[in-house]
Length: 128
Image (cartoon, rainbow, N blue to C red; front, side, top):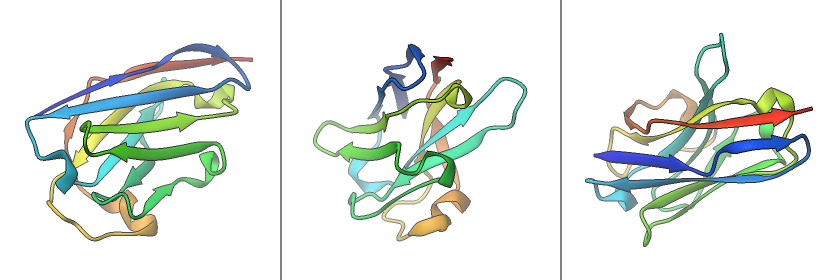
């Protein structure tokens, strides 16, 4: 299973970026997908997740209203649209896939799931 992120970069505060993560080696449409980030000197942080059917999703409070997660099962791709970026969003962003097929989950439960495959990460740097 391979996950490849792209779309990161250096932007000014207030700008937008769209991260993409393409998954191969697994039936993408069967699994919940998540986005995480890790800032320098900090622990990895859950950011957002979306159900396998795209019927529900969840984002953490600090990005609510600014970040949107979506997926295109025909393209084996999950996206993280990031608007109104802030310097505190600076981090390496990772996508990950759930360990369990067809998991039914909603709300904060997304944060508690076990993710088994991870991408290599894409750097997002937001300058003030």
